[in-house]
Image 1 (cartoon, one colour):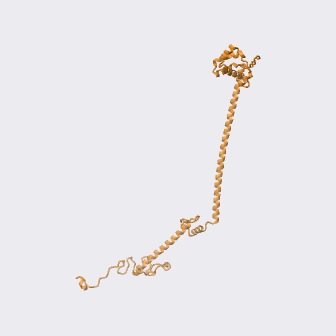
Image 2: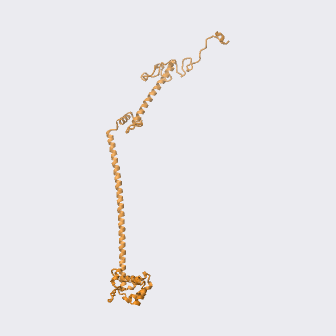
Length: 317
């Protein structure tokens, strides 16, 4: 039956030797990584001096499975040893990473960087020594020492006292400045009041001096005072009438007295006490008498010339 399916050039002789396996091992038994046949691995370690997984007994994890899985058993002994050695290095690196992660978590917890860090936990730098980290952890776990807390409280109280003292000094300085400003304003106001009073006193003294001088001048020449008063009333052209009227009545004598009628003074007021409306010195001051006489003429006759005309017609005014 088999001969029916054979081609003419084929025979039933045994097959030739197969090519090199796919794992890179040549037919002479040397692996593709260039390991020499003397049993030394590429890193210089003898393959027969280490365990199959490349880990010493003291470094092998307790839960490491035995290196005799079905997959590894099918590989050559040297390749399986190399794989186990690299797997041991990877396990050691993983263990170191886990230890580093635990230290980082502990440092974060102690330094208070976590979301639930306790208030007042002392910060710990990752560059601190283990002893400093332990002290920081103990301080964060059990709180600062009473001496440190007392020192902090004393410092805080001292800062508060200093701030209160500065605030009080500032308030006192402001109050003193305000009081000084008020005192200066009061002093300036008092000086202004005194200056005004002095000015009024000087003006009053000047008026009194002028009145005294005018009185002396009027006593000597009452006509000059009367001429000035007529001009002030707008009666500058009326002096001749006034001069003729009072020359006839009293002769311009402030002490003239008519015993038959009781008339007195330059205008011959009847009675003479009427002139008190112009001033209390009506008995002696010619200016007071002239002022009253002009007011009487204005209210009774309108002008000195009208009064003179009446005097000429009736003999009195």
